Amino acid sequence: MTIADWPEDERPREKLLKFGAGTLSDAQLLAIFLRTGVSGKSAVDLARELLVTFGGLVGLFSASQHDFCAAKGLGSVKFAQLQAVLELSRRYLREELGERDVLSDPAATRRFLKMRLRGHPNEVFACLFLDNRHRLIEYNELFRGTIDGASVHPRAVVHAAMRCNAAAVIFAHNHPSGAIEPSAADLAITRRLREALAYFDVHVLDHVIVGDGEGVSLAERGLL
Image (cartoon, rainbow, N blue to C red; front, side):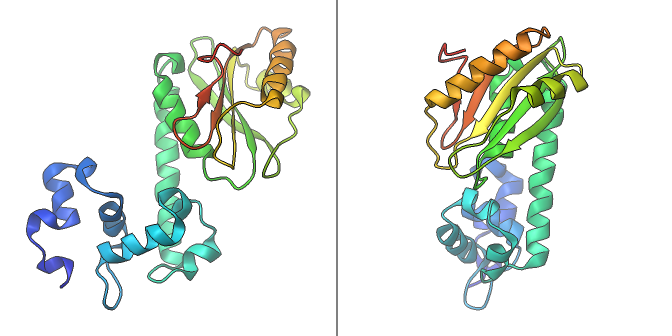
């Protein structure tokens, strides 16, 4: 039986239009993206199989082009389409941040940082540079490292802040392992950067660690 033979309210596309995207499962949403299945499998069956193969949406979305295209039912066209969707999502969230005081909506800030940093195989250290109204000026991934660390140089952070005339900054980095507890090294580099930026009246508002779940805010933990 194909999806066209299902009751209308159970077909992913029709269900989305009638009840909203939030009512669909991951597999149903992915089936709409796939559009068609393969021999012997509907698009929903194929979507479920892919989610198992890649370990969920994060694994699928962060897969390399080689691994993605090697999966049955996928290919370079689907890879390009998915990358376009992901980039549109990132740009939407960045535009959303640019129009408001990021401190008034920490959830939006975390969504943006999670979209940008989660799924990287190596550690990435980034900065959200903000104006004096705490609106986003620039997002900059300044340092990339190994699976368990990245070297962060205060001089480069100061230079980047001065270049865009930032009044404040939020640091962020990912833990590829998924663990979100801040390490002693995380706390130490935060202190060094805060001290370096203080000479130029750039205020450090937070340092967010991205991993599994919602992530950790050092400001909320009282660790700044």
